[in-house]
Length: 324
Image 1 (cartoon, rainbow, N blue to C red):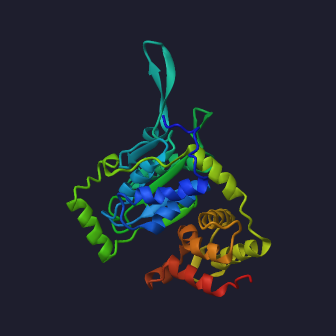
Image 2 (image 1 turned 90 degrees about the vertical axis):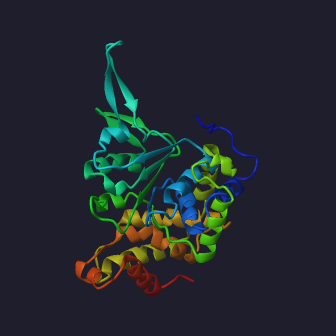
């Protein structure tokens, strides 16, 4: 089990920022996605990664887990996966003539739900309580999950056959929906150079990735993030953005109050990562689209015309007055 009692000698912020350098030993680019994952860890959020196959979604999460000394488990979501395969089940042991609960992979610190939209809704729903309350209930008995607990789910945006889109209620449980793009030309050349030099993406330890932070680091960092101030004018700005999504003619379902709270916490984490002790409107703008894009439901007719949730959010960010 990972040692969660030792906090590195450096400050929590220095240790958390060092995660980027360690992940960079394997992953080229994807700085924004990595920053989003780190911000989610700081505010107990969960992340949905969306990108085409082959852009290192799974590798990015595995490398982050290697740089963060916490327990990591990966579940490949498939059409025949059952809820008990995720949360666990009670089994009868004949030798002891008694029942015993066998924990599922959800009992970990960092859970990678790979291709989460390939499993039916009943199995997707098995994560709802875990993501919202950091516990699972088995036969009426709540069982707490380890702290920290983070779900990172991946999905492919271009393949729909044999998939089950996540319902809005589950999407709302994710703090961020992060889009994983193709690398730039220079980054792709750097990737090939690393492979040519012998990089084995299945041997992360062999690439020199070492733990630079742990659960104790995260707890200390969370105390500092919680202390970041968000003044009333910025709070009103967040509410203004959220309410504007509900009034948009392109939207059939706007952002909920839970989304407003998520944007507040995400902005505090972003400010902390930047070395500030208060939230600015720029922090809110920087993190608004990853926090809100999956909480909007567009009207079918505007979606057919090519309107996107990011386009709606760009319009909202351009029209809602910014506090000075």
